[in-house]
Length: 423
Image 1 (cartoon, rainbow, N blue to C red):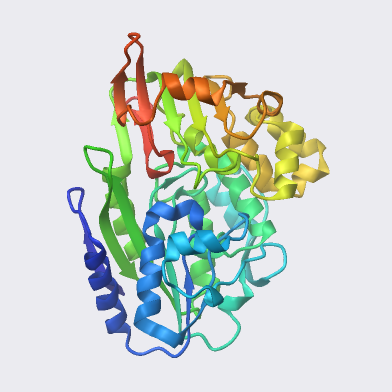
Image 2 (cartoon, rainbow, N blue to C red):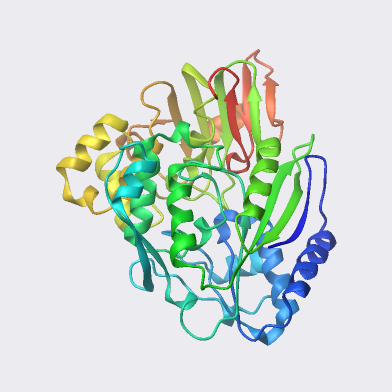
């Protein structure tokens, strides 16, 4: 049932617009006794999901008993991050998701189905796991709140990914990431219907219909001056809101250029990007537009680690971003990668396959650390002087020294390609 829809590429939704749309949808649901909200964490700060979560809390008051940020494998949120993202929402409502222990398995997607939708790329079953909060107690509403945007693992982010990955377990997260990587990131990004999404949909249709989930989906773009603008809000209890948001996101977030780019400079906001696990969005989202032999420069003042999880961080440091063929060989030969397929998938995603170069300019990692995982290194201060984010505009820039670059201020908000590559 579609409860609310508003959005087009020229729309600009204010906080009042979001509140009106959300409350209109919640009014249609009638009264509720026990509500769980599942928004994203601080790594999706610009989704406006934090504001929507606070609005939902104000609507339901003490009927909202729990808020479970969809951490996936990310670190639990700090109190200051909760304040920044969720405003006045009471901290005592927030729960930390432990992706290794706080779980219940709703069912298994058969290996035959996974093999079929992947075109034979993988042959394993997939566990539909969620945080036990979703099934314990007597919840009569689960609000899954988030942003639809092109995504490297599933094609388009959010909808039931927020449930089965955001509150899922290590096996499900690992296998979904590996499925996407094995099928091919560039065959997935920007597409709503992908093998990973088909697996998630199978889980929703067969194992989760008893869960009272309502999906609240935003679409965020930017105006001509690079300011963030909310282009859409869609709310429903099924895939309809996701499909509508995906259609709008492709118009808003997908930049299709006439020719490949020789040099791209990406800035990573230090409050959002502290690891290459997240910061490699700079690679994922630009790889289809980078020319063979091109250069990607990543300005990363907040970069202090590789993985959001200590175990994954150790695996990235051990093996590095060495390309699909090598990572698949390493995964076959090493139990630690076999047991953590999301790390193996991430190593594939973060590799340029030696087609273009990646130069990281980190705030808190050393030259030796960066080069040990197969990236190039450059000094952040020197590169920030040469490519000053305060002076650059999103898109093409001509520098004083005559250099031509393409600048991206937030890779998480888009996907870039050129016309002959994306088919």
